[in-house]
Image: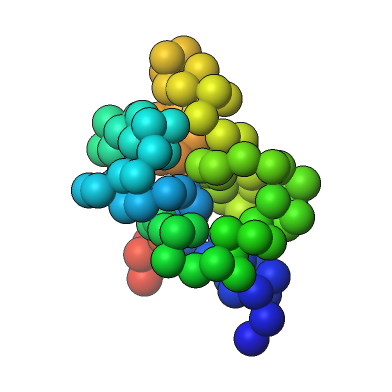
Length: 113
């Protein structure tokens, strides 16, 4: 599978995913750290991709949605942005609503409901 397909798969298979330097538990960049903390503060589970462990993703992710920097946050398959935009959404209380809606949308309806 080529790198752009791997990126696309991560974005489409996860209602909320952050491409970051490091991990939420061990971030390797202040911007990635604060962005992951904002996502964690929503109380919603999210996926992450450590771009430092995959040079192909590190080098090609900026081409995926024409966004040159890390971290990159995708919600419901759409790029919402990087650190600044994510923090602004968090401070306005909009991030929690966005990620909750994406996670709810991704869950199959209960059988017989």
